Length: 262
Image 1 (spheres, rainbow, N blue to C red):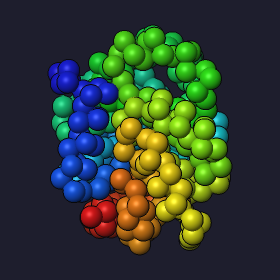
Image 2 (tube, rainbow, N blue to C red):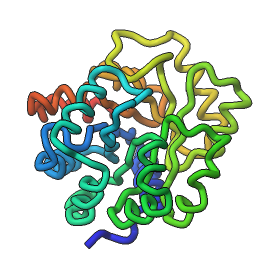
Image 3 (cartoon, one colour):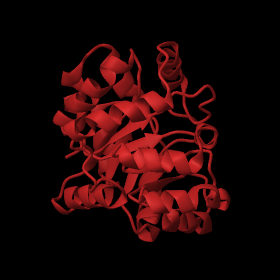
Image 4 (spheres, rainbow, N blue to C red):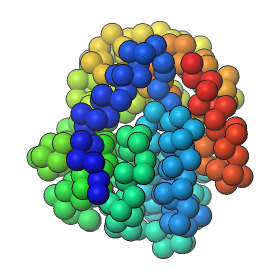
């Protein structure tokens, strides 16, 4: 039975408690059903036990516009295994209480609309999902899901880009719940060798306008990247590199990435 305390407040409480202890947040991203749905819950459990602050779960989709080649291929593998949004929700309903960390779904508006907005929000709440990231849903269209999402008590996490104006930063930061997802590169997800030199100034600006923690994501793939980003942010989200390491069953390297945050 899912712990009914899960939701927006649970995500906010876990992140705030972590930061108040002087620690940084580390959120690994996985693609649900990569390698088959039988690997899904064990993978979540391993990441939870390795010290993940929260876990972001990608939902397989045919047109993931924000994602680079590694995540696109993981999505394709999951779809080839017949993994569906319904199957992901169903298994989480059964096994959610075996994972302590908050869970965030990352999906696109088309699968949500196709599934049924009210039905989806109700069911993800029942499955113990705490937050949502929807990269292709701009602020101007939040009303499409807002009533159902608010009723379900699920955090809607906003992404802010490097090219956003200060006015837009404030608007996005004010609307974000749980945390503000600060994109560190101009482009799609995927490992990078280096980042812009003025990132620290950008993050200082974001933290000055954000009422929630500011986390860095996109392109972070090494322990050095994690250390660099956590020197001026509240934490990091790591996706493509986690997927690659999971394919090699390299939990040791994943633990080292997580430990590099503090």
